[in-house]
Amino acid sequence: MEIFSSTFKGLIDTSGFMGLDIKNVIMILLSFVLFYLAIKKQYEPLLMLPIAFGMLLTNLPLTGLYHAELWNPSTNPYFAPQYLGTMYADQSGSQIFQSVFTQQTSLDYGKVLHEGGLLDMLYLGVKLQIYPPLIFLGIGSMTDFGPLIANPKSFLLGAAAQGGIFFTFLGACLLNLTGLGDGFTLKEAASIAIIGGADGPTAIYLTSKLAPQLLGSIAVAAYSYMALVPVIQPPIMKLLTTEKERSVKMGQLREVSKIEKIVFPIAVTVIVSLIVPSAAPLVGILMFGNLMKESGVCDRLVKTAQNELMNIITIFLGITVGATAVADNFLSLKTIFIIVLGLIAFCVGTACGVLLGKLMYVISGHKINPLIGSAGVSAVPMAARVSQKVGAQTNPSNFLLMHAMGPNVAGVIGSAVAAGVLLSVLG
Amino acid sequence: MNTALRMLLESAEAASEDAIERIQGLPDAASQLADKDYWGSVGILALTGILVVFLILAILIFFFWLMGTIFKSIDKSKAEKKASEAAKAAAPKPAVETVVEAAPEDDEEELIAVISAAIAAYEGDGGFTIRSVKRHGDGGSRVQSAWRSAGVRGNMSQF
Image (cartoon, rainbow over all chains, first blue to last red; front, side, top):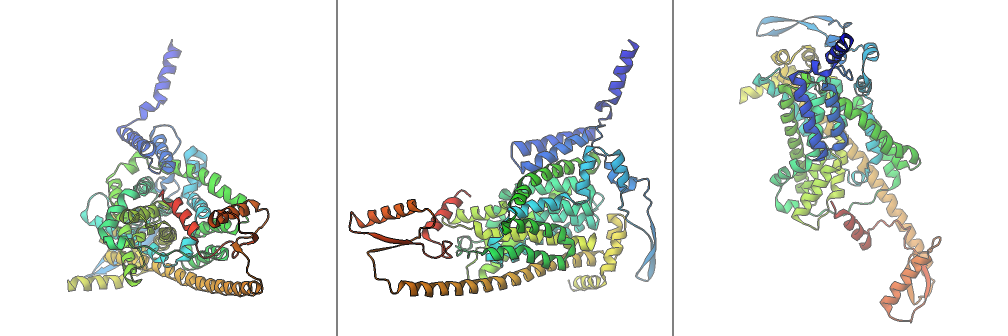
């Protein structure tokens, strides 16, 4: 009887209930909301479902699947802030002295390997920036850059839509003035801003380097808004354009030869990597996937990149990014700000694209439909479909899809370059 | 307004990579915000960011515009060459009752049958012989035919 009771007591003591606190409960309920969004509403379900499940697993106490503390350098026992020296700034005649310590980012990977759980191991792929480029490999092997090659001006629209990123960067810094919450450091502001790129892998890539503590909330915000593109974009597009502009029919795109399609990925890789080397992991691998596809000689590899590899990485990426959403990181004012700022980033990006589209409409002598500008935020191919849909609403015989695909795929390159720029300055 | 602008310009000048590095070294948002070069650095960073994105994509536009013009001119000269060859080959031939475009490649009897049927329907009964069926161009015509556009339209109507 005594054995029975002690066993039973031991069982209760080691059960999750003992470790459960209110924060965990809230997070678990939040994961249920994400399940609902993924399954019922089908918001990017391929990523949202794994993210939600990762969130559930990580917030069930004592499961030991993911240890946030292993990834936080300040709890690393071998971590000691290094004293860099004293810096002073001369301000209105008086000298201010500041002691400066390094922002220690080195992790104890040995400890992770020894003590980590399943999701810690899988998270290595995020932390070491392996998954996002591999997703880009799959995207590259599925993307047809033909419309962009046929109409290189589309690159401009893809660039303009990145305005949302940099506007939001300023916005996040301005938010610091309100004094609400802890505020955002430059690195955090940049990571939030990249949501405006409307590109999940790019957002995860940049955030895992600059502000890994925000990874969960930024990924959830980015993928939610990408799913909401058909809801967010049309009102902005309609607000900024007149009916006459929306009904512009664009001429047929010229057909692009195979040689051009083969030269494209090679040239983009060389040009972009030479100017912004830090964008090379994303742009280079994206273009590698595209070259495999366009060359037509690597069919087996292309099939793997498009299907099995992409699917495996998507599962790993989703569940581990979800796992980073531990209660202490997620349940804060910051998450709310991230959600608001992410929405602003999306809206401003869309507006910038449409406004440049309007400018091109005027310059081209009313030949370019400004609606294709909104497709410059990546979100392939959803954003291009939205352009098509809004165009067809105004004039049912108008087919903008192929024209919008140009800015759309240019947006993928644009947001990867923007991430590269932010990394090179802040990384 | 003027003073604000001047202050902004001054702080932008003061902001250099050193300033950004120094601000980055500060541990939290509040102390970063307190740095005198904060707004200058932030502004410069956002401005250069979007400019660099535009610059790179502009370089790409130039490159692919150049590539496009070269390929278009190659295509044009090729097409002209082909057209003149075709004209030479076609000239000595006497006119036949019906000339049809499309060529037997491997086993295209079915296609020829379809074309014959179409001509029969168009011409009415009897009164014609098909001498040859030649494909017009290389099959991947640069100009989109009405059939093709109709097909594309059909596929895209779902979006």
